[in-house]
Length: 298
Ligand SMILES: Cc1cc2nc3c(=O)[nH]c(=O)nc-3n(C[C@H](O)[C@H](O)[C@H](O)COP(=O)(O)OP(=O)(O)OC[C@H]3O[C@@H](n4cnc5c(N)ncnc54)[C@H](O)[C@@H]3O)c2cc1C
View 1 (cartoon, rainbow, N blue to C red):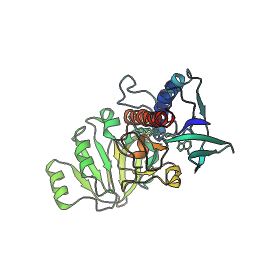
View 2 (view 1 turned 180 degrees about the vertical axis):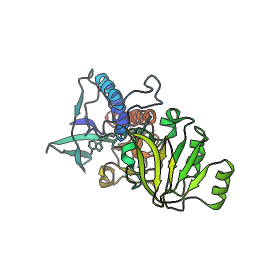
View 3 (view 1 turned 90 degrees about the vertical axis):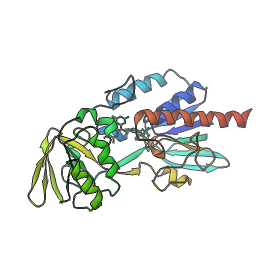
View 4 (view 1 turned 180 degrees about the horizontal axis):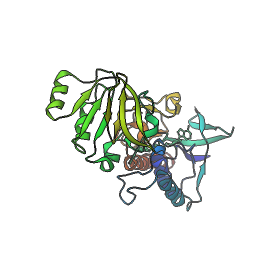
């Protein structure tokens, strides 16, 4: 019988594993290794690791974990989890079944980009989602924000912090009110509501945006407001409560509404999506598991 399984080996699941391993718990981390930031070449904003490649971050994390003999890492997808008589059966892609007392879900999110020709050629190289992650690298350049989202106004203000040379493209959507457009114009932020035909550039570097009406604007990079969806259906199938923003509801120790199931990292949408926040949430959920196991066993 395992003390806990952790599903998802991003920064959140990796840090959860570290805290559980150091508490002498018998644990397995299942990871199918498709992290959200796989498209990026550099990850920023984690002190001591600023600019590291996501794969190098993961390699160092695994080296830290391999010191603990009570930790195992299986590179496979957890297909299903069933709760029976207070324990969890974890069914994996290879057909194996593991029994555990607790489960931490750190399965992350997937970005859903607007359907624009060429967008994936630039995403992660010169087009990003988060200015806190990649704003410095694009600072003071001619930027675009592509957003179809009616709640985009605050994101525009944020990106303006990094560059005053900003054009907002709504790709044919009516994403901003008249008052918002007027305020943007007063800051010399142009809003183009025409439908985008294609993004143009080479080697991942954006050069211009071509519109269906034949117009074209030159931009060196920018941001895109992506939709977010859960990377896994495990939380839903276990009956974990989902908040209106799509995040899994957790308490201050990562507990979901299902006893014995914890969630951490991007999956909860309870902190801004960043590696350091995901790692922190993993640590907190692991402590939640340990507190609860100690209470049950003492
Ligand atoms: C383009 C881009 C750039 C970014 N840049 C930065 C940056 O510079 N700095 C920063 O701090 N943050 C950055 N982020 C955000 C950062 O990537 C996330 O906040 C962070 O990866 C979240 O960690 P996580 O552990 O919650 O999820 P993830 O890192 O997404 O890890 C989840 C893991 O779970 C696995 N998984 C899912 N389902 C299953 C299953 N059923 N069984 C087994 N495994 C499963 C996945 O394959 C994946 O390996 C960026 C994000 C994007 C999209």
